[in-house]
Structures are given as structure tokens and as C-alpha cells.
Image 1 (cartoon, one colour):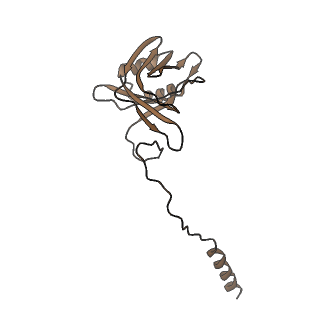
Image 2 (image 1 turned 135 degrees about the vertical axis):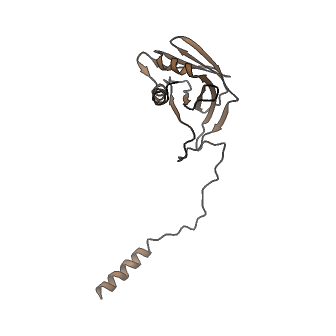
Image 3 (image 1 turned 90 degrees about the horizontal axis):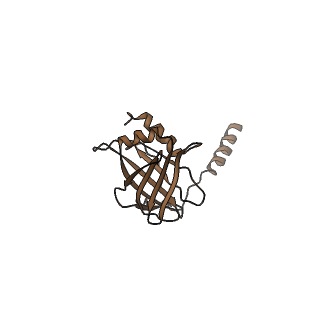
Length: 180
């Protein structure tokens, strides 16, 4: 008798915990022009990315190296700004140990809103030769200037006492490739 009573009380208690939602599904359809960071199991490209050495009151870019060698012996490098302002990236200049290496962008700057924020992602690509990556790897000082319609935005990537996250991740990718 006690067993039946305990079973009955347990069944009633558990049935009170089951909740069925009557609200409609609130998921929004995915918009292709909005950045939404979703994990994936498919690897379509290998890249390393990181920020340069940021300075107060200046937009701070993120630099991405794609490690897939293009058919013309070039690698893609992307510059991204995540900022409240839009930027039109026109050219990127790297200074390796004081020597300028200037690259024109490969197309129009992409500008997309970042999901759930007021920020905009402005990004553009350049193509760099494999020999440039070898020089980049062996440089002792690296600066970057991103030329935009609002002027040049310059930062260091590697200097005497500071190493940026962009350089650390570049080194990681460089070591794992066949050293272009």
C-alpha cells in the first residue's frame, strides 16, 4: 500500500514539472549580410587572425592570413575593422624593418553589420607573394598602414618590446605550412 501511495505521489509531482511552451518559435531567419558567428564542422580554409598593437582613440584592425596558396603563387591577407564607422579600405602598406611593401586591394570593401550590435565590419583583401611572407617572418619590426577614405590608419604589428596577437598567430600558421 505504501509503495502504491509513493508511486502515485511521485507521478503527480513529476507531471507538474512538465511544461509545454505555447509561444511560437522566436528564431529569426539567417540574413546573409549580417555577421553571425556560428560553429561549423566543415573546414573550407585555414587562416590565422589577430589584432595589431592597438592604440587608444584609433580604430584597431584585425589581420587575417589565409594559408591556401592561390594558383598564381599568392596568399590572401584580409584587414577587418569592427567599428561604429564604415571604412573604405583602398590599400595596405606593410613596413618590414623600415622597407615599405604596398599592396592594392583586390576589390570593393565589404561592409556588413555585426549581429546584435551597432558595429560595422569593413573588410578587404590583398594578395601577397610567398616571398613576402618569408620576409614578414624574418622581420624585426613590422608596421601596417591601412589607407582609407578617412586617411591612413597606422599601427605596429611587431616592435622591440611588443608582439601583437596578429604576429603570434601568423607565426603559428607559418610554421604549420610548408614555409612559403
